[in-house]
Image 1 (spheres, helix red, strand yellow):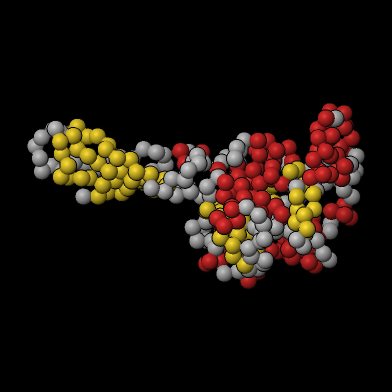
Image 2: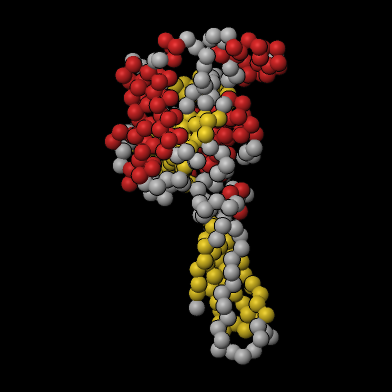
Length: 315
């Protein structure tokens, strides 16, 4: 006889003993076979209270193996981790998120126009790379079973192009995720710079804010918007590596060293262009990983909150 039970933590009920024998039984677990456990630690959410945990326990009763009142029971635990879909996963920020997610044992699907990138590392082989455009995507190919969609879509160009890629593309993605019942949506947006209004009215910023509004309205209690400033790291452009960290990292450290001194200057128009701290692309990725696993994280994350969230994740 076999029974199957689902639960939110690593505890499963032992199936009832058949009444064919009148002998009293002392039950013991003879084998615990974790058939799908990765070699690393589990994400903390597996033992949390979230209804989206993927912990499924199957147990079977071995009716013929009875010795001295001890019944052998095989318990098979089938652990199903998160599945995330990264939009723009082959890009600078997207690939960092994919890499971090793979390191945490998360099932990763990337949707981007370029498909699989030419990046070093064995983690690349563990991502499902789907080529495609958000506006014409076959969502049946990527969204079923997803627990989180992460959008890194954005870019520059003329007004129409910036509105389309920063705003409309993300809005399409949010609505697709909602239609497919994806529980969480994470958007990589941009810092709210204290720039003159005529600059903030450009298609880049207005598109980002429209996308933010869509995320927070469709996902009021599970949508996450990250607002980093300048993101640094080693960025590949047309096959060449651009070491943005040579600028961003010392800039970040310098601002951190004089943060108390420069705080009064932050109210000056345009001061954020210099005083807003850069953020490592790895910190952005780790903050996303933290948001995936923590249902208490939702709403807008500022630069400092992104760094705090990143510090909570160890890979």
